[in-house]
Amino acid sequence: MTTLGSRVENASTVSGFFGKFSVLRDAIPELWISFAIKAISIAAYGLTNSTLVLWMHSELGYRDDQALPIVAAWSLVMTAMTLLVGSLTDVLGMRRTLFIGTVLCILGRAVMILTTVRWVALACGLLPLAIGEALGGPVLIAAARCYSNTRQRSMSFSMIYAMMNLGFLMAGWLFDHFRKGLGEHGQLNLAGLHFSTYQTLFLVSLILEALVLPLIFLLREGAEATDQGLKLVPRKPAPANRSFLQSVNLTTRQATRETVQLFGTLLRQAGFHRLLIFLILIAFVKIIYRQMDYVYPTFGIRELGPGAPIGILWGLNSLFIIILAPIVGALTQRFSAYSMVITGGLISSASIFIMALPPALFVPVADGVLGNFVGHWYLGLHGAVHPYYVMISLFVLVLSVGEAFYSPRVYEYAAAIAPKGQEASYGALSYVPFLLAKLLIGLFSGKWLMRYCPETGPRHSETLWLIVALFSLVAPIGLIGLRRFIQVREAGRETES
Image 1 (tube, rainbow, N blue to C red):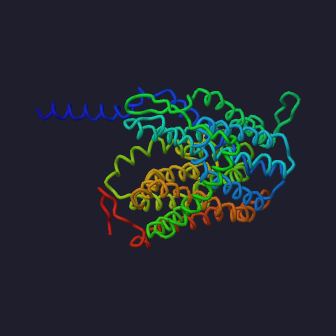
Image 2 (cartoon, one colour):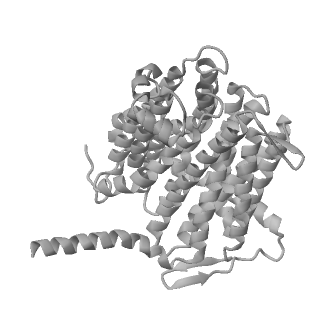
């Protein structure tokens, strides 16, 4: 009887596990379309992100310490626009907002492909791209909620997260594939036009973005999933005495004013101060990811040579997260979000110290089984495997474990610390670490890159990574040291003192 009962229980557990996925079987088409849009648009964004600084060096002639601050300013514009997207979507509608954002991304990339005049490339290329990316991202998160019913919602957000990681994985593969095929500083001849390798990568990201356009037109205006089935909600028309552009202008001004008022209200709340300190500390872990976005490609090419397959090495992070995040989430549900953020922060900070070690220490590992697996089987290299390939793969694995512990819990903690009825306002602030991390990397990493990993001359790249590793330690140390002030009790979870 016990054996039979165990079998029934195990069968029920397996059935329940797969049942979580089957809830999407009856999802409306718009939900699946939004998943596809997310994967493709993230692939385009990730490919652009990896290429951006390299393009600034090669095509626009910027030095490391000039290119990185421009990236920081670009991120500021993107973040500022993101704060206004919710209100703009109310006026424009979800489908129209997505369409405008996608068109701006396509036009911005087109300018970046066709010109090497600095002010034109930045003002007419990079700026519209920032606005377009800001319009698209938050809308797709809202789409996951709008196009799913209450039973499907949790799995829908998990799928959006998976699609995001799939997109970054695709971007890493494309980044390596075209650099290997054309050469690091090669040329593509197409219809009488000549594109450098980095312009070609922008062209590929433009094509990916263009694939999103027909998908947008498949979204039905006003479609909404409810527990009773599909519901078509007509969008509110603009007042008769006001043009469409006037409505958008008015909404933008109102959204800006309301955002300023909201921050004024939040500043007077004790919980906001706790959350702000928490998020500032988290930014010091997030600098690892911004380092990988904007500094790692240049470092990889300088240390490992032109055409080095560095994109799919960093892409392992997305693959590991798709596997690890649900497992770690299921095993650590009873622990407080704050504890998991500390644990994940410590693991993530420890990971980057691998890159701060002398590469000579990893020569035996590179010549062994792990080096053969990473270098020859996964990357398809021939001959001796450079120790940095092994170091990067180990670093990415450990970093991914840490990310699986802390990253989902940051948003959860923001909701836990928020006063009742203000969860959305506090949740929106969860993007603050990304902004601060981009500013830190943008303002300082260019000088570090020029000094410790120059294009020519002796390099001491381990020092470059050591600086970032020490910065990242601020997060777990600060979270532990300020625990009594920051931590709040989380319903249904243990709260260690």
